[in-house]
Image (cartoon, rainbow, N blue to C red; front, top):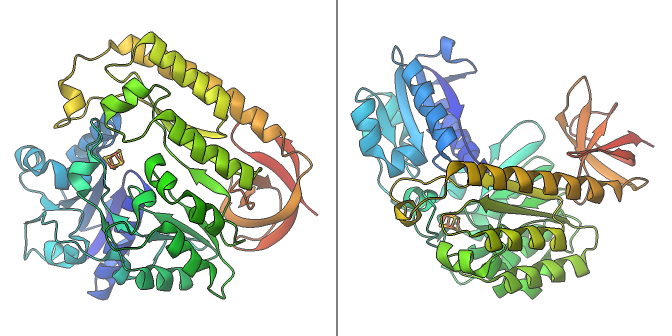
Length: 412
Ligand code: SF4
């Protein structure tokens, strides 16, 4: 059969779609790009934000004349919703990626079992010709009050190091190590992220690894060996550490499991070791208990730590979460706070980017940009827009200008 994929959400979902496509090809199916050419459409869903969920439901509505498989986090966490609104569609949970052929062949209508599937054992996923995605664990050790992903992905299950390392060995030049929380990798199997990185660093392969997001309390637990493992020139100096709020009261309410000083301690230690590190963080604006003073603390924190990437999300109450039971802040306050933080962070990013003008060094060209340009990444995972070059190659480049979202460079 001809199968098309529509994938929403994070790199974990992208990797899951890649694994399903590999399985389908092995069983003789063909992957097509467009839904109109497909006999079956797999919609790999995300539940992090309400607007994305609304978009997904709209998409599902438009596919009534097709055979459809609803996969991913919505299928796993709200199968009853899918059954009620789309009774004719098949449902495949997050750990059923190896069972996609059975679903498509019509042998099974629903599979949402959390059976602890070793996805790293299924091989590496190539996002495109330059970037590969390697999943390292499913689930996490936290129970954040606002999070629906936890309902879908469950508790931590770390994949064996040997499978992950083999996947990196078979990957393209740039590798995204990914999971819901990289910081707790291995805590269920007597190892940790630093050990994993050390084994990757020992590979005789030229590769650049981007480490995915890690919760501050886990990063703090392995801070010293983790910083050492980042020293390898195989690891991008890119730290994605979501703080979510600058207020300890809000963090406690969110059940995040750390306080601001832990976050700042980790960030400062990384910055001391790698002064040109790219710091990325996530913020939720307008959490139900967030007072004006709490919000001010978030503003102060951002101005203090100056992340050059800040993913700001307006708080959305998600079904089945404890935060959704609280009295919610009015929408206009959530929107105002989101807008204000977006403005502050754009200014910080641009100022931080300006510091790179004049820098010269190795860049891996990993993306086609707008207007016939190419985009490369340097050791700090900075996106540098270039006019020339070859996709998938390393070049020597100089940064000539800085914009809010990228740097501009030329090959030297
Ligand atoms: S760490 Fe918290 S926000 Fe992240 S997946 Fe786990 S429960 Fe959700």
